[in-house]
Image (cartoon, rainbow, N blue to C red; front, side, top):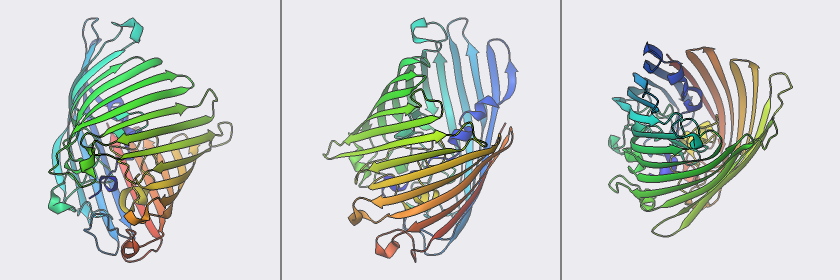
Length: 441
């Protein structure tokens, strides 16, 4: 089991990551106190005409399955008489997979789990430290979701395997594509600085995810934020892993340090989008790996439907560990190709990828897009993941409480499983489809 083959963060994060809090049902409110009830639910229908050898538990043929979760609980904030604001949340999450299980075999359709998802407390400084801006100090601890930068390295602990691998040893409740569970088990997070100028984060994160080998990490960031964009530095020091659950590739995480430099913004040009990051890894046991990308896009804001076009080139070295990457800006970040990123590979390691994205918004509540990916394996002795994928998707906000997201994908591998690839039985073009419903109150 290679960790880069097992990483999937929900494509719902951007759409509902903060919507739940914003649309929570208000139980009590006054000038200083707010108590809310939160409910978030998602359900997806999935079909893949081809299966993949990624987990070793699937046979040639097709798979049809369903995934769902419900997250429910309370959140609060409490003014502290001019000494900032306390806040916190407690949420349970119930998830499951039904049917054949996913096309890579990480789930088998038997998963049903209810566990605590969020349990954290925090404090924001308000205007106590004027030099740092409003809420320039934000301290929190407990079980919570954490994102760093563009999600290229860390965007939650969202790998949700089921019973299809190692007799369920890594089962986290299924819902593999939806990736319902995103929170790190233990955290201590200090954020310093406001919305402009210099700011930074210091974090201690501990995962309880066996499929990630339960790493303990120290994370530091330093950013400069301006109207033209954000420039940032990140350092990740993995202090410990649970070797009992580590794959051979994950054993290299023990003592591994990851560094990155990144930038994102419009450079002061309204319709321009620029983004890039370079990350390098230094393992205690020796060996250095790196990954990087450059992306540019343009939105034709004065044209009907405001079409946008983006191009990105990314490259991940042969032994690069993609860590906890996740969905951050929309489809394709950082799960490149719905089939390739979830089931067949590559998985942001040992590959270079050309990517073109086109998106239009014919209605205020409807966006339609197309994504093209060209995958080229660097070292084919480690497996041949060459292929191309074309995905079509829509994001339809039916109401304030319901989002519908259909996707159709065409994936063409260069090799089948017995020729070094992963598609079982043939190298035909795979037709993949999914329909996801999300609601929050």
